[in-house]
Each structure stands twice: as structure tokens, then as C-alpha cells.
Image (cartoon, rainbow, N blue to C red; front, side):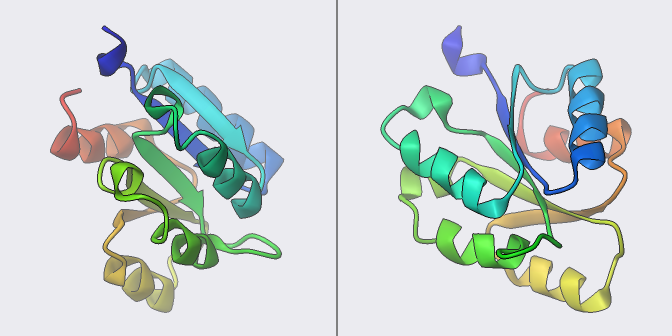
Length: 136
């Protein structure tokens, strides 16, 4: 049954957003495990540390765009260099508090990003998105 476990990696520098989104994900029962990272660097470190343990790798990443030091698009530049066993099975939705047209275009241009979601996250919107890609 372990193969049916679904993990989400939540990357956001904002503590309030992390708490709200974690709570929403927990209540919605869309994932079995939530891994929380407070920066893009921390997210990449988590992925690199668990590359050899497929069960620890996320199936889905919720990635904030606007973060200090390394933003969501910088994260994607590193992410696309990771092994295909991760990048081919893991989907990414980017999160933004402002739906800037440039960000929308940039997110849509990435082969790894399935959608740009507006903050705050809504369980129904996330569920609809996941149903497209997973058996929910």
C-alpha cells in the first residue's frame, strides 16, 4: 500500500501561508504526507537528500513564486537538472498572491508547472487539479 501514499512538498517563505495551506491540505485529505520548506533552497536540499529514497520524494510540489534569495522560477532552473525519476513523476503548481501576467506566461512556459494558483489556496481548486493527474 505504500505506493498509494501521496506526498506534497510545500515551499513558501511566508509562515502564515505555510500554516494555512498545510491546514487546508490536511483537512482536504488530498495527501498522506506534507513536507514543509521555508525557502526554495530548503526545498532543493530536501529533494537532493532523498533522491535515492523514492518513497520520500514528493508527488506534487506547491511552490511560491515570490521568495527572497531564490524565487520559484530560480527553483525551477535547478529542479529541471534533477534526475528524471523525480521530475517525470512529480508535478508542480506555483503559488502567487498576485497573478502577474508575466508570471503566468513564465509558469505556463515551464514543462514542469501544471498550473499557477492564486493565494490563498482553495481545496476545491487543488482537488480539481489533482483529479486531472492522479486518482483522487
